[in-house]
Every structure is written in C-alpha cells, then in structure tokens.
Image (cartoon, rainbow, N blue to C red):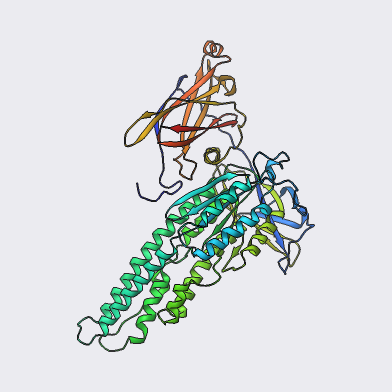
Length: 564
C-alpha cells in the first residue's frame, strides 16, 4: 500500500468471496433489454453570452452517433426567484424540491497546486456563495487533493456545516512550495551542467551537457506525469459517486495546474538555457522541440470527460491564479526563465481545462482573479437551462455514443455533453452502490434488510465482519422451469470509510430453484445471503444492492459500523 490513498484505484478494503444462500444453485437464464431515456442539460446563449429563454422542443435537434433522435421530453428551467428557505442550520428543510430537480455539487480543491493566497481567497468566496448555489434539497461535498484525496465534508444539505469546514481548511499547508522547490532544483542542475560544459578546462562537452539536461527534464516530467495520473484518478473516482443519483449534478475543480503535456516547461527551459551557447562544428548540438519531448496525455485528460458524461456530470474548471506566484516572478525577472517557458506551461494547463469543460458542457475559468464572477456564471447555469430527453437506440451492446445537440435558430450557442455511455443493468447497480457509500439514495422497490456480526480480528490489522442480506421470498420473481420455479438475483456490496476511500464493488449472482413444496414452506420467509467482509479499524460504511434479474427491480440499504 502506498502512502497515497486514491478513491477507486487502490481499494481501502477487501471483500472476501465466502458466500452462501439458502437455496439450490441451478440457474435459469432470462434476457431482458431496456431502452432508456437519456437526459441532457442544455445551456443556450446568444452572441453576447447571455442565456436565451423561451425556446421549445421544436427549436432543438439531437443526433446520436449521427442518427437523428426524437425528443421525448422537454422542459425549461428558470429559477428567477430563489427560494426563501435555505438549509443553513440544523435539521432537514421541510420545503424540499423534487428529487429530479435537486442538485448535487462536488467542490474539489487541488491544494497541491494552489498558491496559499489564491487558496484562502477561493475558500472565502466559496463560503460566501454556497448560500446562493444551494437550495433546499440540494447537497454539496468538499474534497481536497493534497498528497492524496480527502473528503473533508461528505454530501450535506447544511450550508453551515459546509462553511465551518472551509474556515479550517484555509489554514492547511499546500504542496505548492514543495513543487516550486523541486522545479528550481531541476533548473539549478541544468544550469550546473551548462556551466561545466562552458569551463575550458573541462572535458565535459556541450553535447553531453545537453543530453544530461534533457535526462533531468525526463525525470521531472515523469514525476509530474505520475502526479497527473493520480490526480485524474481521484477526479474520476469522485465523478463516479454521482452516477447512481438523479437530479442535476456538477463538479467544480479548483486548481492552478492540470497539464496536458506534463514537464513541457522543463524541456523548454533546457532549450532556452542552452540555445545562446550552441555552436556549429564538431560539437554541434541538435536540439529537440519541447513538444516532441513531452507527449500529450490526451487519453488521460479525455477520460475525465468520458467518466463525467457517463455519469451525467457537468464539470466546471476554475484556475484562480491572478498572476504567477512571487518566486516564479522573481525567477523570470532574473532572466532564469524566458517568456516561452511560461507560455508553454500556461497553454498546457489551459488546453486541459478547456478540454474537460467543453466535453461535459461546462465552463473553464482561466486565471480569474474575480472568483466571485466565476461562481455567478456557474449559478446562472444552474438556474437557467433546458432539460431534454430522448430514447436511446435499441442496442444490447453498451458503450460510448456521440451526441450533437443544436438549435434551428441561427446565432445561438449550445453547450451540453458531447457523448453518453450506454450502461448495462450491472453497471447501473455498481453506480448505485458507490453513490450509496456517500449518501442515502433511497431504498428502491425490493424491501431488503441487513444484519452484521461482531467484528473479529483478522490478518494485518484488519477485521472480519459477517454481513447477512435478508430478502423476502415473495420479492424475487420466479417463473416455471420444468417441475420447479426458478429465478436469479444479484447482490452487490461495497465498503467505504466516509472520507473518500472505497473498496471494489463485489457482485455475487445467486440462482433460485424451488419445488412447489419448497416454495410453500418458504412462504412469508426470507432468503439469506451472507458474505465475510474485511475492514479496517474505525468507522466503516457498507452499501448493498439486490437486483431481481428477471424483473430488474432492485433494493438498496446501507449501514454504519464502528469496527473495534
């Protein structure tokens, strides 16, 4: 186990495969195909960037993989007057909005890349605007990336709780200074190589010095690439927590760096440092373009858009850096860095921010000193948009499908996600279990219940807990299969720590084959499905889903366990 804890990448818990059910194990296969309605949030603006109201379904057209689709449902959402009641203090708001229109927001603050001044300013702005962004029934989560992912505030509808945590986080240490130090150290080594090559008494050639400096650049870029992958994994893990819930969903990513070409600024620094000293002759140096040395992590950056679109999440990317930090500005004033180094570094981040926002129908706010204005733009998106739905193409094959939404009126700009992911029923159950680890998502149609045994010490500091899932026999659909009545159900189980760490989601499929005599004996009884879970000491959350594989009805439950 590494020191970093990445949601959904390195499991914080492990599920043992010890299972039993009080039924025989023959299986009947029943195939079902559902044609789902795909819901889209559409943002329409005019040439001046103002929201456009008053459009109808006839003003839009939707293409799925190039084929035109008929709009099955349409509505215009306009929140011109904000509700008077806000969930600011203890208790649950009584005037709750419909779940389909409730809003889930994740604020992800990248503490490793934020300058302390910008970090404090951002927290202050968030603290002052959460009351405007959140309405009764809405929920918000605050997560921080700082040498790993931490969920500082799980999903809550209490603004006061959210804002209290922000006050404390304003004092946290960021990794910005360490990252700047590492960059300066690499630059110092590059200059040292050059100085050795310029020494007339040295046998160290300019060609060797340039080659070694490029190696320094590769080592620096490899570290940044590893950090980028960890950061993207954390982002995608948080996006997945919103998959199994309805309503409007968004993530606001706040950070100063998410590089499309990790390390490109160091390669450009090497070239700029050596360029004035490169000469022709036998010791000529062939310099490589920085772009060729730092290949783009396009697929990695694009994965954020794909995961967001698969889960119906709009992503807003905010870089609050009004200017470069003092240390970097001083370095440039000394002539240690050229303008081209800063330009390539900036463009690499801008490309990543814009790519993610555009793919999901969100917005990218780049080097915005006015954070408040950025949040007002997000608030406008939440309060003025069109909700469209269409029936997806009938296909048993899941996968990504491209979307194009446009208006028939000229001069209008449309923002929405560029694709969606057709999921299997199993994918959807996994989504619901992940979501249930972070907040209650509802019990569903099957009335299941959970019981847990006493934690028993296991190996390597873990504890074994027996989980039993009770399912009413009449809740499972059974159909004639020869002389028996048969059916199948699936049980999905996940474990989380409430702070962002979750296990892999374990799935067990169970067949039911009963004679008429057995069926009568089990009337008004329960099937019992059990498994042993390995957990770590402390508070744990267990989420369970049971799906009838014939009717596709499902039930959901969660339980909190204090493992000691």
